[in-house]
Image 1 (tube, rainbow, N blue to C red):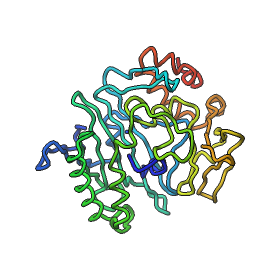
Image 2 (image 1 turned 90 degrees about the horizontal axis):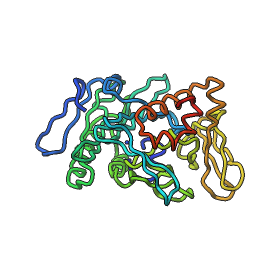
Image 3 (image 1 turned 180 degrees about the vertical axis):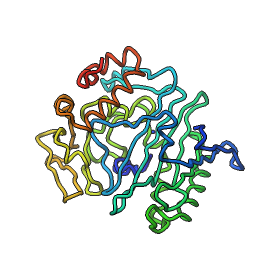
Image 4 (image 1 turned 90 degrees about the vertical axis):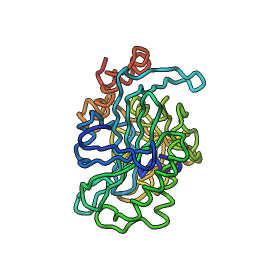
Length: 324
């Protein structure tokens, strides 16, 4: 959740049910969470996978899926005059998870990291889940801590560090080394990146993720309702938008240059600006493009839970998908 914009773009990186047992222990309000069946957990608990107009860039061979569950009462819309845009805020009872998958050479896919947050009447709570073994489809375990509680955050990070240093990564790789642990600790400072109503970056050298956030500090819901968003400009990751025929890349002055090798793409701007991708939703929908249809399904999920102001504010995005 934290550690800079490029880390976030990698997705490396916003529960009670029979599959998830929550128990308070010696850590007080810090809660351990166990998910026995990750393959069904998000579906069985009312989450929906969100597809933003511009895909999130990832490490080669990785995949990121963002799941959202909107609580009773629906989304609340506000206008931000200084940014000249509308912003949504999630109600209590909402949850969001960013799920990172790894795939081996044989095509086997398994979860290697989950980072998320939830809101209730008492406030916001971050959580991180990790696989308990290197097996494909392994159960997940993790901890939840209150946003802004430094003691809980430190305790959760220490407990999770113990888990990743004692458990092989997916597909039988080695447990985490010192470098892995330092990156993991940085990612656990979730509040540093998830700032409410953060504007979109204007240049590629800003420390925080370049996408704009909503009133709850999430990046993907606003990206579902916008046709464009910043693209990856680093060779650390692969930008999947590079092979999407319905996404056009541009720069503040001119067309963006596609860089990289097979399976590892990123963009550059001659003027040093931030490359921006824009999806032609109307053309993609008319062609029956599978990803564009997923985007429209995500917009429908938000539309059905959005207040009247929000439906008006994002009418163009909904109309492109034949909604409203």
